[in-house]
Amino acid sequence: MKHKSLLLAVLLASGLTFTFAGEPTHAASGNVTVTLPKFPVVMDGIQLDNAHLRYPLLTYKDITYIPMTWSISQATALQLNWSEENGLSVNLGTPMSVKPELEIGGSFRYDRYTAQVAEFPVSVNQEEVNNSEQTYPLLVFQDITYFPLTWDYAVDKFRWVLTWNDADGLSIKTNQRRYMSGIIYDDENYLYTYVHNVRDRMFRVPKSLDGSPELLTVEQSKQIMASIQALPEIVPGKVESIPKLTVYKDHQLWYDGNPLISVDKEEAEKRLANRSGETKNDVFVYRESMFDLGADTKVFAFYIPTGPSNPGGTPSSKRLVIVHQGTAQEVTDFTRAISGFRKSMDGVWLWTNSPTRLSGRTGSDRGEVLWVGADGTHRSWNQILDAQYVRVLHHEDDKLLVQAYELFRLENTSPKNTDYFWLHSDGTYEKIGNLTEETTTKDALLFIVDNLDAYVNRDLNIYVVRNNTISNVNNGINRIWWDYELKELTKEYPEAGY
Image (cartoon, rainbow, N blue to C red; front, side, top):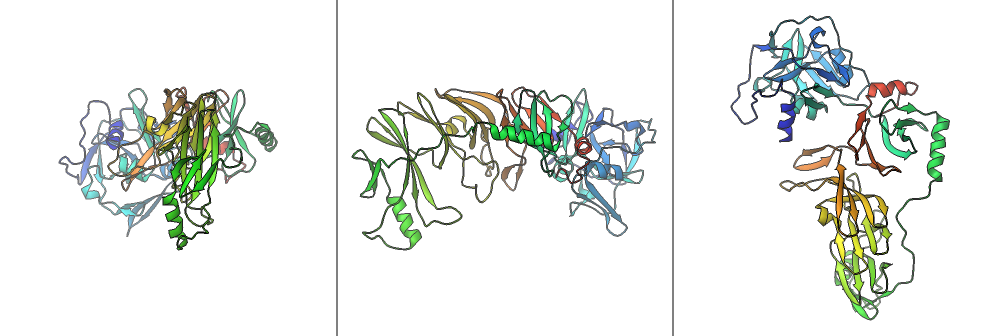
């Protein structure tokens, strides 16, 4: 339905009919009647004076059409090539941070005009377009080819974002050159972010998101870096190295004379990996961490190798056991290595690494968050939130600020929860805001198309940087600075951005 919603967003006005794929349609041929949009159109922050453009935007079958002119191609990073033999090719290139300044000189005063269905070969991103079978075919008006702003072209092929509302009309955000990295520091009034591809330079942005970013000098940027390095290290607690309290005996791990877990499976996997049989001289090697929650409760985390060491990571089993008043309980819904913890008077928060990108190194990681109380109870917050990944952004004694998100979704599976939350040690939680990242589905898998990095400032507001847009998750305010604006700020660095 998301695809259909976007198409509806570019209709001429509310109440107009629309034909969805799957209903009977007939491709047009020859001459067709087109009109000029009767609503405002903004491209990359610039209001278009459509009636006076040399090549205006058009509407056909209630869909907005855009001309493929030289000025459009420069502003949108579309590479146009024409030949009598091969026709028109349109390919997505690298954004050049060009302000949309379209040719003027037209005077369009009538309600209707005539355009032609394109009959020459056209390819987009090296794929041929069969124009005769298109519900919304490519058109020619004043010898210029026009493309419809459907999902297939605008979003999938050109990577644009279209938004619509009755007051402001249609907004077109084209593929932007990215100048802002993630936020790295804040003070009382400002946020600070590096400039992509420029060494030792930062932007300073008002926390209110009003006004313009300021490019700091090298010296100012180095002062900010010194301020960052002077901050106390706010990292999860480190597990103290203490002598093991458990022992291995008879294919089990024991504590205080009682068996905790069987390790038959790990032993068998290691023998198979080593391709050797069991011998009496085999030494069972494992690592242990322990969290003491008082006289009655201890939490043991075991790291048990199941194969030989290698640079890519030693295969291992990670197992967590809670011992409360002498009774052991293994936690089966917390299965990765602990990357951080926070102890309080009532228990301990434990969490694992939560990557923001899928890669060979992080593919087996899952952001897991667990609460273990001093009374021996525990809660899996992934299960409570119904979240695929839970990433800790900020921690206090009795609560965590977290981000729930997806990195993939298998075919025919339901989406998981994707939002920001405060989690409380008593099992309650509250939603702060929505994830600002867009997702896309390809080949039956869902992938995050932009970064999930979020910054929590000293006022506990969450800020996210995405495509030169900074969003304050807590109050819903966001602000984009167009790439041509940021290019002007960094004009002494032609290679800035990517």
